[in-house]
Each structure stands twice: as structure tokens, then as C-alpha cells.
Amino acid sequence: MTSENSFDIVSKMDMQELTNAVHQTEREIETRFDFKDSKSSLKLEKEALTIASEDEYKLNAVIDILQSKMAKRGLSLKNVEYGKLEPASLGSVRQRLSLKQGIDQDNAKKINILIRDSKLKVKSQIQGDQIRVTGKNRDDLQAIIQLLRKADLPLELQFTNMK
Image (cartoon, rainbow, N blue to C red; front, side, top):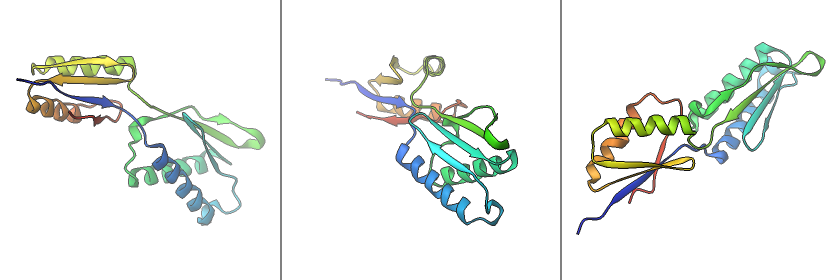
């Protein structure tokens, strides 16, 4: 009796870790000398992060601090999309960073094509914002995971529900 093995491909950002990275960034801004008396702030919303600062130089410095805190916490910078720099009140600037959650249709199709072109005996199907890969041989599933890790995709992938 042969049973089907499967796993899901998802792309999610750990919001708790992101919240921790934002808090660490805020603490570092409070203690750094080059941010003394500056009005730099980070505001985390459900699907975005808004960074405001006095000028473009300080805004870029805040983003740099945030990126280093995210990297230390194991969060991928691939799941962050940077919006354009906007002028705000009193000569300050702000930038909106969108947080990508889930796999969009275009990337899901690219992943499906990569899996199909691998010639391994597996099936993949798009299920909303994730992809389910099934196959009889567990080694084929492991090979697909390795293939996708090596592929240069514009988002960070996680592999869950290995059955």
C-alpha cells in the first residue's frame, strides 16, 4: 500500500519577531547620539510598516538599523517591499514598507513551472496563498525543497506540513 506524501510551500513573516525587531530599533534610536533630539518613528500596522524621520539621511539610517535587527532575528528582507519616499509635515519625510504575506499568483505560477520542469514525479497545486506539493517518494519532495531553496525567487519560502 503506497501513501501520498505532501508538504505546503508558504511565505509568511513572523509578526512577533518583526514587532521585536521594531522595538529594538526604537530603543537603539533613543540611545544613539546621531539621533539625539530627532523625531524618528516606526509605526507597525497589520500589513505595513511606516517609518518617519526628519530627513532622508536619518530615514535611511533607521531603515538600516531595522534591516540589521530583522536579519539578526532571522526575518528575510525579501518579504519587505519599499514604497516611495514621501514628504510629510514640517519638512520631514516618511516611507511605507509593505509586508508580503502569502504567495501571490505570479510567483505561485513560477514555482509551479519550476516544479514541473524538474521532471520529478510530484504534483503541485495552488491553494490560495500557498502551494501543496504531493508525491509518492519522499526523496522527490526533498529534492523539490532543495530546488526551490536554490532558485532565486523574490520572496522567502517556508516548507510546512510535511506528511
